[in-house]
Length: 459
Ligand SMILES: [Zn+2]
Image (cartoon, rainbow, N blue to C red):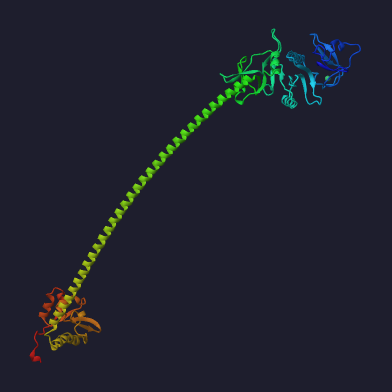
């Protein structure tokens, strides 16, 4: 069903207007003989005027209508709403057109409200709302989508209201869309069910305008359902928009104070951090100072230790030098003693041999050699060097190149004797003189019985 039709002579006619908008009466198109060739403004198919049981005037498609005509499948409720809107628009002294499409087909409106300055209100129910809204806006047509009830996902995303049909002697009312800002609560609150006629009048007079809610206020409080709903776009007055702006300024001041408080807190935290850092640094420096003190103490101890060691080493060196001096002195003394002893030996040997004539020496040599020759035919050889120190200031005797004995060693030099071999002296007195030194085994001493004084008789 539809409210508009194209009259073959008058052009577009509107069943909701008393003169059909073209100075005609309903009787001139309804049940005429012959029929007026009315056409659908949308699809061009033939339509005929009808009146419903509730005395509602409208146009219906003739049989064989195209299936895709937009106006075809709309409900009675939808049509009644369109009619109500047109009535409300006209009550506000605006011009209302129903079921209008753009000449080039880019847009179509169920109800098109227009004033002398061209402002327009176009309530409608449909999907693809956003795109169509933009298309209207591109044409400079103000838009308000109207939902007759139920779920409308686009509510609050495009300029829109939800309406409720008359009940309990109440006319059409707007139950979602208009809102007022409450400064004390800092929130938008939905206005409680204004009449649709009033709402349309407010909109057409621009007392109520579409408002894009500031982001932080998009949760709208609905007192009747005691719940919040999210809305980007609402209908309200410039006074409430100003209130929202004032509240936003308050919130921004609060935000700024919070931000400043946060900055202050961060500054304090930073100051604390720096103070802690300073204390840590001071502690670190103190530890470093202590460490240096300990290191200096250690170094001092080491220096003291080294000094002690150096002193001990110097003392040891001096001790060693003293010992060395003592040792050298002892060596010198020993050498001196040795020389003295040697000199003593020489003197003793000198005395030992002085006063002994060569004859007496020969007597002694013979006393050794003759018995050997006689008994064993063995010849004794006397050291051709004569008296030598190595023979203890005596004369070495050899038999067949082997040492046989020592002839008359000096009493002071017996320690120089070769071991074992016997020594030969002239008589018991000389033997006694050797043995009495205690430096020779008496068994080694062989003596003869030669006289101490040269026998003159033997000369
Ligand atoms: Zn049609």
